[in-house]
Amino acid sequence: ASEVKLHGVAGASGSWFERVEASSSINSSSGGSSGGSGPQASRNPALFARAQVGDCMVEVWQGNILENEPEVECLVNPASRDLFTREVKGLAGAIRSSGGQALLDECASLLQKSPTGRLEFGEVVSSGAHELQQKNFGCILHAGIRRQQPDSDDNDKPFMKSLVMSILKTADEKGILSLTMPLMGT
Image (tube, rainbow, N blue to C red; front, side):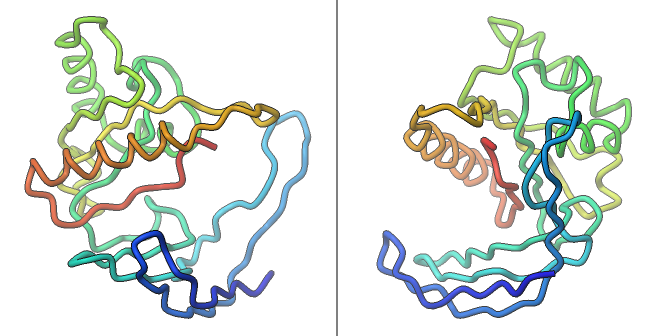
């Protein structure tokens, strides 16, 4: 277990994060054949930071998006270009297995409408939440993400900034007022 503390920090827009202190369990796993390492989310959600940005409240939480029942209407899926047409791991895999066959069918239909038959990097498409409506999600925004290699020196900040702006623009166009977006690009 470790203590998570965030002190007041000026953001790019000049807003200040509220100081939040939360005890949270952060389990570290190292190396191994699974290929995973680093912190894993606690099952109990913990508020990490909060900032007012214009008319928008931004909160950073640590926890499992699908196990905790967030009070948001939209889930962001950091999607592969195949959009569930093959087995995937992580959050996308959990969404795939929890969303039901209707979600898989809708995603296949979305890909059929694409000129390339794939979700392009940086592209954002919307689907229904299907079985995930039980978790109070009304829709899913699938964001075409490219994974950065752990030892890469590539600077993905411009891509990630553009992707987040595309997600927010799509949400705004669809009248979505609240969404949950996981850590992406890791």
